[in-house]
Amino acid sequence: MNRRLQALLYGLWWCCFLAGFPASAQELSTANTARYRGDGRWDWTVYIRAPSEVLKRINCVEYKLHPTFPDPVRKVCAMGDEQYAFALSSNGWGTFEIPITVFFKDSGVRYLRHTLSFTAPPVERPLNITTDNTARQVRPWWWEWTIFIQGPNEVLNQVQCVEYTLHPTFSVPVRSVCERGQSPQAFALQSSGWGTFTVGIQVFFRDGRRQRLEHHLKFSSAKTERKR
Image (cartoon, rainbow, N blue to C red):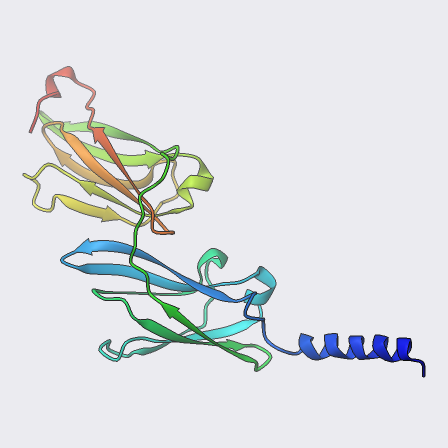
């Protein structure tokens, strides 16, 4: 057997040998989103990033949180959204390193580590998001209304939650909506009242960015255009 043939056979053997192993470090990585909730606490989600063909080979992902957490060892076996695969969500006030074990369907195992990051950079440029509201009068001087955001589908798919800050006379003035819903009225919030006012809006994106907006409620009758 000449050397060229030997080299060719060795190369084929080596490719087959590597194919039997789990994804390489270059293919498999981790990331997290974070959202500030006040009082020094953050909601966060840690997840796996990899090509689609690699994600489909994963059986479960085990996360080992800080020992101060109840049930610190948590396993996720549902991939969910490929963009945020095998995601684990929790909350707390400090960052720490999370040991992660990725179990593959072929019995392979990959060990990773991820240090939580709580930085939430603002949106560098305004995204194409607008606000609007509907309203209907249910009795004299009293209206039911719905406020929502609108935008291109590819932008709305990046939104995690929308936080609305109502007039301080409301019993719960700060309200979060984390369900997009099926209608064009995305992340809609319903409420009622007798007067219009300006609603402060924060749009939180899955990658940690956020965008501030404002919307002045509109009712259909000119007589209702009074401040609360």
